[in-house]
Length: 284
Image (tube, rainbow, N blue to C red; front, side, top):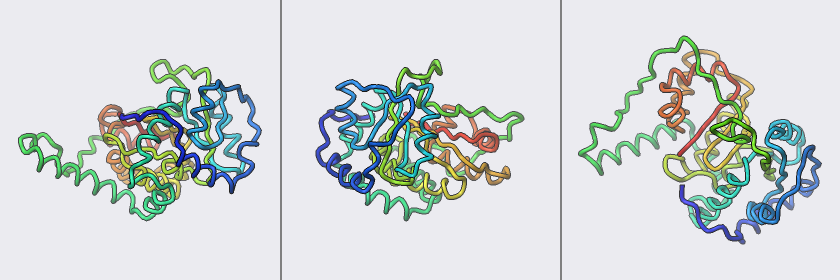
């Protein structure tokens, strides 16, 4: 993932300050387990442009729930200082991208997209373009026929919340950062942080479209977001295998790594969606 120089984002911070004017109580919100921040962390937070609290990783979800219960903005767990650094660096790198620099534009465009049709069309376009550019590899590219695989006897277990902990050991970080964006909607977060647009990770507007659609249909809430991962928690699961397979296929085109480097088949993922309230997405 490309990361630009980590300097103060003058334009972004100014835009953030303007947005925060409508939410004057954000930085005053009391949070249990809040811990002190280093000068370097303060610099990163200034570049992020929104109020941030630092808490023990083990307390991240409870703190998020406390903050979510307030009507004062929307909280997102961003992970440890390494994740915070990468998110800020990525924001800087993509800040000059005309297609992704204006938060209002991203939200407007994303809200108008027909998801999941738009993500299926995007992936087909990518496959067609690759076949045209590299005809010698055309036979190695998957065609447009979906192979869901057999329905599993036992559904794979969802990893749940992950951004608060070490990916290998599962041990919670000593400290993580929780940002609060000046919006009531978690699906605004990809636009606020200019999140996405590298490798197979789609542009921010597609994340806005996906999260908005899933919030409406499944009560999905964005809980965690680090440099390459999204953690969502849903209030409603798909009720039938047919619905779960369609949802799993949409999530596969949205983030194929969850299947190709994860549960193995779309049917396995669909079964997991029927058993868990947590959705996990990861791009490398």
